[in-house]
Image 1 (cartoon, protein in one colour):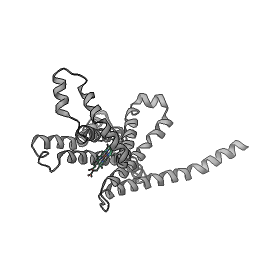
Image 2 (cartoon, protein in one colour):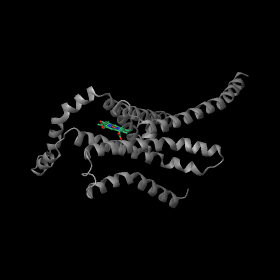
Image 3 (spheres, protein in one colour):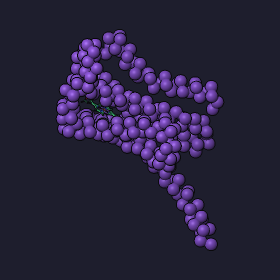
Image 4 (cartoon, protein in one colour):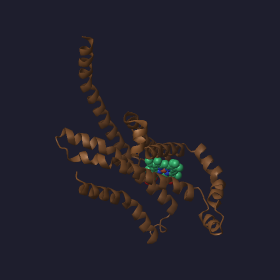
Length: 243
Ligand code: HEM
């Protein structure tokens, strides 16, 4: 792919990934957000859903590329160049989701923070956070879905900070690849988080779970076939080594 096409491709991916955030901003300005029965809950669900779907889109890139290679087409190879970017967008939405939880869901006093900052009290944001901290810790202890959500976010955070090329060089390609396989765990924890937060009998998380299961099955099939292909090669090398 030449440079110009790459720039166009990146612009399209940025635009697609930013669309949900822009839609939310638009809802805020045209009043559609406050018209919701519970705007805070709406933002929490909106950002949570997009974090998970974008994460799944990121996980779909490798299987799509491999399946297209098997079909004799190389066209989808280029998708790999956008994998890092899409993963970072999943982290972006997961962080918006976490901030919504801390700043809006948990009763963080935003007006008092702004007033404090305007009055020159630079530590006001921290002071306000300290006030709601016990409630957040209590929630974390009591609600398992919050623990699982936090674990998923922590993995996405780890992958985001190790995504630059410098980090790859520092830890080595193999280790980096192993570490970045944790993205599957982040996706699985995201699904568990969703199942554990819905009421008993509600089946809405089935779609994300089905997509993740299919992606994992495809990935496993590739691992198995790769192992089967490399086994005779390994044996041949060992036999050659024996003589
Ligand atoms: C620090 C971590 C997290 C916290 C504190 C958190 C908290 C929450 C809360 C409070 C809700 C709404 C629960 C309710 O309505 O009763 C929610 C919903 C949700 N969260 Fe999270 N979450 C976290 C991380 C994540 C991550 C990393 C993902 C995705 C990978 C995610 C995906 C979702 C989804 C899909 C929903 C439900 C959306 C819906 O019902 O339509 N969350 N989360």
